[in-house]
Amino acid sequence: MKPDFDKGNGLLPTVVQDIRTKEVLMVAWMNEESFHKTLETKETWFWSRSRQELWHKGGTSGHVQRVVKMDLDCDGDTLLVQVEPQGPACHTGRISCFFNDIEL
Image: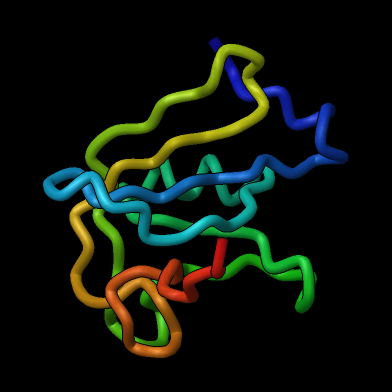
């Protein structure tokens, strides 16, 4: 099965998960180019909607994510990327971007 980039106007939501701990590290967007660069380099690449450019996770910080496994959901429009993180995923320095509790 191949990703369906047309459904999301050229972008796929991408969930990044630590392969060992199964913790969700971040959610980002991939376009076709970043998807192919990820496959080619075995490190995560994304599309920045705000900057309108490709970005290599860890390109500046050194906290790259080495890709171990990639899966598509049943509709082919969402990616799950399992990685071996080489440092924190979040720009705040936290392991995961998901640390803000919502009071229920």
